[in-house]
Image 1 (cartoon, rainbow, N blue to C red):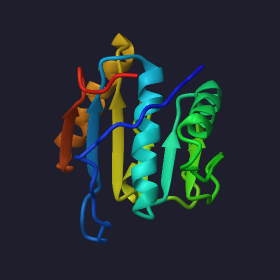
Image 2: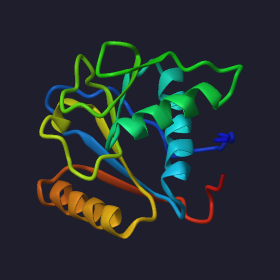
Image 3: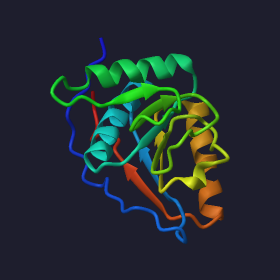
Length: 163
């Protein structure tokens, strides 16, 4: 069974986006598989929720939506994360759809591609886990953002973030 652990993430702060600013992009690198990425997502969502930020978690497919939904329910019984599946207007949405719904604050992108509407968000979080094809797509995403001048932060959590 999936078990989420409490982890301290000190590098997760942002301010609301002003209309004239670019989307802030953050990459988090993990030394583990997609299950470890789900643990990190739960921690990031929890932190964003405490800051009254709406979050859209964009997953590669329906099975990953179900996995993250289960992980959020199992993360910590005392800290319920009010979420829904689909891109509806719940504070936290988990979806594999190609539309963002009403969300515009935080996008956590686990899909290999960058959605065309990413720039409507204040912050985009790209999570890199160990899978050679997936890692290459995230490298390509990094280059895409960098070439266009988006502010990028990179957080190497390998060896620091374990299930």
